[in-house]
Length: 486
Image 1 (cartoon, rainbow, N blue to C red):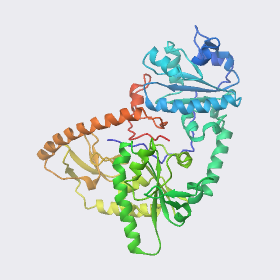
Image 2: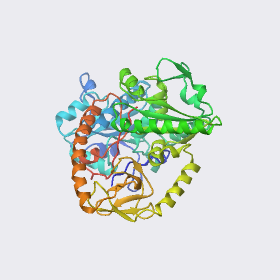
Image 3: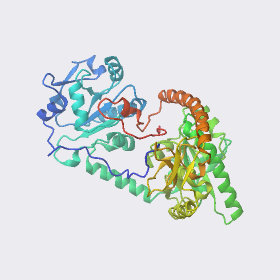
Image 4: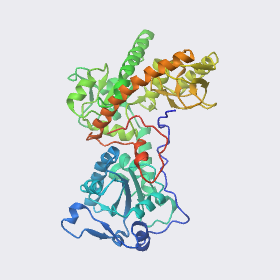
């Protein structure tokens, strides 16, 4: 069974690092036992600093500072992407005189990789050869995926003084998160709530230099105020992202069906979509947007990055639905399109509840089990209360929830609408053909992954590749279809 990470997690619940007994104040002796060894009382300074001063910094020099313990590796693209973001935040904080320091804990495969990765890091590092200290830190902070940034306070006397979701804090708040205290984070969350409470489509999509959007010609300007009173979808996507390219034609079809239904219905109700690009260059933006029948933010408009942080978007494609009153209806627009197509409109809780009831009724007439073309085992109809739940359909590769046909032997799952009933023998023959087709597709995905690794834009999520290569933890059973890269 393939499962996509759940977007419904409460992003305000910042995770605290596990503690063993009472927390300790970060005294020189505590820091030394945490970051040093019996043979080492120092850290490696940055490569740039080493050219001007001593190559070592005493661990005791970190006393009184907020410390970020940074678990990362050169071989993993999301680490390299986050590294660029972290460098910017670190250098800005240091230039402001902030008492902040970062200590790099490497998961690189060899010394050359470690040195190459560390070359552009302006902070401190634990020597690559000190495997025992690195293992101890991974165990202490229960690190399961990378990049990971554990934030320690200088007076670490309370359980809520340590956070190991520093990556999330940096992506979400940047330098504003410093000094990473509970009081500061509570203040930032209150400010976020205030913004959401006063949210309108105008203040979402405009900035002091721009009050318009682009239509399909890219030259004609459409006032943002023309969207007032409409249901609006903010579509965060990019041409280089294969799941985006696969989802866009479906969204175009659904968009046109919704527009047609509203026009036939009359009454002035309307639906619009605004493309928020994460493309790498102007030509890619124009080529991709040229396939779309809706509006767009200008390429590289700063509002795109603001929206990504504001809605805490973690991957693309993402479809955020804004109601006629300018308030957020759901961040699950893509999921709802996949589940209910045009029937999902207007994407409200009441509409989704109604559609779920319809599915429950429809499920009563479905066969309890079926053989499906493309899978050799018998599939059993399950619901969320009888072994089912959120899943990725192994046939159409889109999200599903509630009812599904599931293989009880291997976890294979498909939407009920995707079932192609066959006899057991023909199911095996179809499976052979499907396996061959997927091998061809996997070659394409490998090329896409290699291209994504060179992307200059920071990525947000860790896929399960991190856990598989990460030397101190077992691989976690999770699949992330695409990282988000604003």
